[in-house]
Image (cartoon, rainbow, N blue to C red; front, side, top):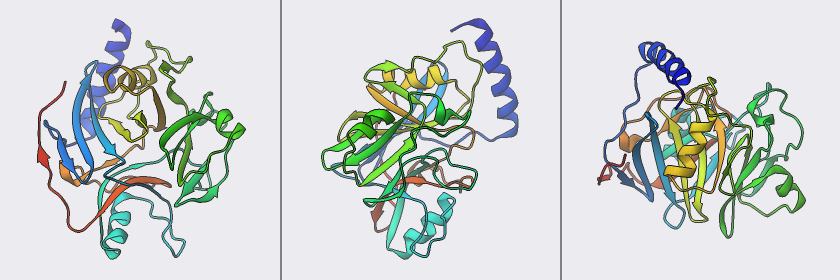
Length: 271
C-alpha cells in the first residue's frame, strides 16, 4: 500500500476516531436466523460482514409502511416490525437517493416496482460512476448485473436495488478504481458468493473504493458486488450489539424473523 495513502488514511482515521465512537462487533462469528456475522480485517481495515443464507433467511427491502410513511431509520423499522410480530435480525441502508428523498434508481419490494430503472441520471454522485448496476433476487436466487444488461433483458425479481458503482464485475474490479485514491469514507455494499449466499458488508473505518472492492473479491470470494452508500452508511445487528438507530435513510435492506431476538451462537474469528 503506497506510503502517501497510508499516511493520509492514518491522519483521517485518527480525527474521525476521536469524534465517532468505534462500532461494537463480535470477535467471533455469531449465527442468528440464517445470518452469520463475522468481524474481519483486510489491509488494516476492520469490516463487519453478515453472510445471509437465502435458503434459511429472507432478505427484504423496506421504504414506507402501509400508510405511506417512510421508515427513515432502523429503530422505526424495528418498532413497526414488532407490531407485525417480527424481529429485525440485520439491516443496512440500501443505496443512494434523490434530493426529494426517493430512491435514485430501481426499487422493487415484495414484487412491486416503486421506482423505475434509472439509466442516465445521477449527476456527479457515485451512482453515476459507470458501470453501475442492480442487485436483485428472483426465483433462482440473488444476482448483480450492470444496469445496461438489466435493461436489455429485464428479469422478474421480487426485490431489486439499483446503485453504483459496481465494485466487482464478473471477478474484476471496477476499471476506474485507483488503489492510491485518498477519497476514503465509511462504506457499505452487498456481494454475491453464490445465488443462495450473499454478503452484506460495512467498513468500520474509512476506506477507498479499491480496497473496499478488493475485500469483496479477495477475502470474501464474491465475483460480483455492488456499492450501496458512503458516509451515511449504517449497519444494524442486535446479535452483535450494533443497535444504533441509523441516519435518515430511504431504502433499508433487512432480514427479519418471527419471534424474540436470537442472541446467537459463537464460533471462530477470521482475519
